Image 1 (cartoon, rainbow, N blue to C red):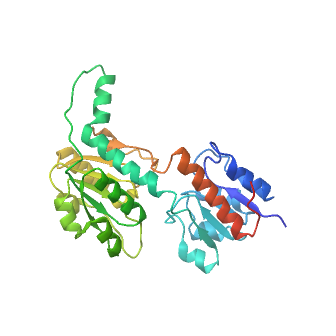
Image 2: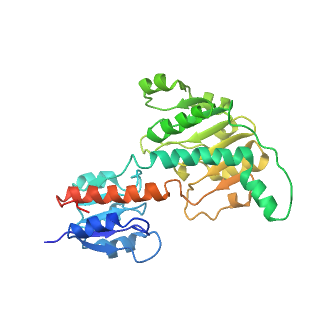
Image 3: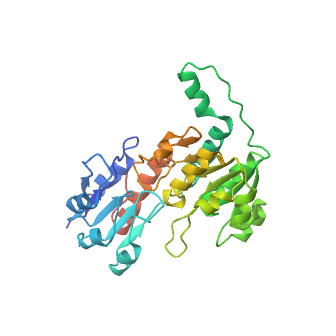
Length: 312
């Protein structure tokens, strides 16, 4: 019996056909997402009900979906986050959930730094002024010497901290389960969340969603931040109360924000009205290099699970 695999991603092997060649050479039967958008629950079931494996994106795999995929044995996530998957239900079904955690470290950390530079030097603001025919120079500021607070010192948070330090920023961090050996080696000061918010010129979020330890920056937390501080979020949209952020940005208490993620995507909310905001449509990991590597590793994971050859 041949293995049937659904590629649930909206796009696949667009810039590097190696993942597709790996699947074809392994002799699997492939079904593609032909809907040209992120699959909703009913579409996952319709396309994947006969499949033993799925190369997954961020579409939802809750109990309702898994109940209707009785043949599914392996979910291979193209990316790191698995909060779109009911892991308890997967465990109960002996469903293997795999991901590609190391690929996303560099591109997400780079995006946090890039957004910081955009906000500090008003790159988007100055670009928009020129496009509108307004030769107006908006004075920016240096990153060197600023205090940067990293919330969440996992793999991505660590890399972001190292990058900011290399750019001569003063870095402090907060984490529920800190890696003390790394903190000592990197010379990053561990502080409480309140201390970090109050003392940072720039706050960058790198927190994972966890049901047992939920994290949200709400009105009270935002009020603790320094007047004019910058806020960067490349982790998950649920980490920030978007209404509270809108009010803080509009009042100027938060000087600017860089957001790549939102509570509802595609995002259509009123944060779009503000000028002191850099917004991108969840593209932190979307580089040619990282996308190709994620797809390749996701395919290798699923082929290895089924004991199929990995040959290009």
